[in-house]
Image 1 (cartoon, rainbow, N blue to C red):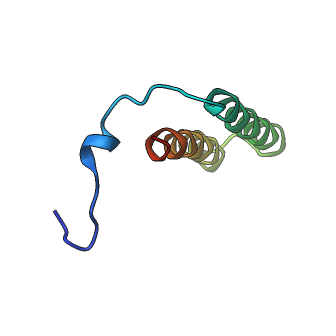
Image 2: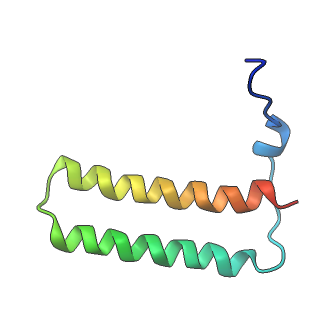
Image 3: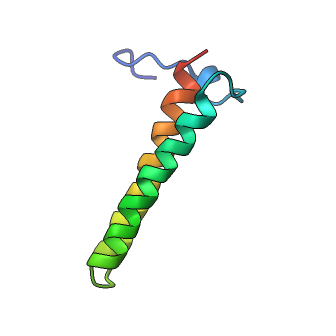
Amino acid sequence: MNNHVKMDLENIFSYHPVKGDQVQRYDSNQAACLLAAQFIDQNCPDSPEKTLAIRKLQEAMFYANAAIAVNEQ
């Protein structure tokens, strides 16, 4: 593995039980991304770019939730 980046692979690939207000923040992330996806869906013509934009929002939601889960132990 690259010495410039130290990753805690066990933490990244582990189950992280929900605690505190994490559920509410996961829900807020989902709601914000859903709102943006609905805006794109309503304002952009069907196209590969529209599909990618929505997929990237889905990806952003997943990473935002992972940021909470993986970094709050």
